Amino acid sequence: MSRPGSPGTQPGPPPESTGPVVTPTTPAQALAELSAGNRRFVTGIPRHPNQDAGHRAAVADGQHPFAVIVGCSDSRLAAEIIFDRGLGDLFVVRTAGHTTGPEVLGSVEYAVTVLGTPLVVVLGHDSCGAVQAAKTAAETDTSPAGHLRAVVDAMMPSLRRAEAAGVTDVDGIVDIHIAHTVEAMLGSSAVLAAEVAAGRCAVVGMSYRLAAGEVRTVTAAGDLPDPAADPTPAAA
Image 1 (tube, rainbow, N blue to C red):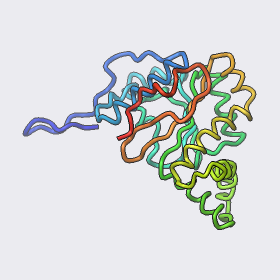
Image 2: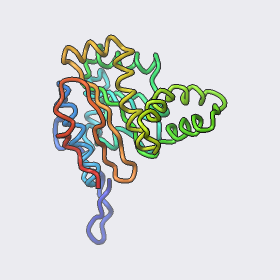
Image 3: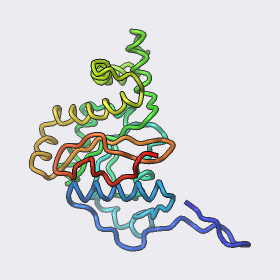
């Protein structure tokens, strides 16, 4: 984010990291780092850590990301930007509606077991088009053409859960879908569930507000602080 210069000067470049950044090694540390980065993004004072040429060279031979982000493919949900992180920090897997399948679960397991990543985040957002598409399909008893049908079908369990709970608004369904995705990942991946049970990893469901830029915790599994004490900015 550029800042205006003094009269007669050009705007300066974005601020870079002020020094070495310590990589979190525990789930709680990783969550705190993401929360701090999101606060910087929301308040308009990002540090852009680990984006300089020196760090680019340093991570060329290996990576040690501290969080896996299983996020929606929405173009407004760029994880490195909204969490104010840089190269080598986040292992990002994105699908429409953050739907999961074997390839997604395999990618998460790789990050957790091979790279030693201590935190997995399921990242949804308000006004989700994929959720709206699934909601419309359920209400009209129709299915979209092509491979979009697979995305909608994958979201139907969340739609049924929302219906049973009497939740009809899209953003309420998004929260239910985030929680269901966390549960489904732990239920489908014995590897991930074992890492969480051992305390080496945790899984958090988060929702992002497109206009405000804030993330908030929806659900969590593993050795983490109480979500009620989530340090992310409160909704306006």
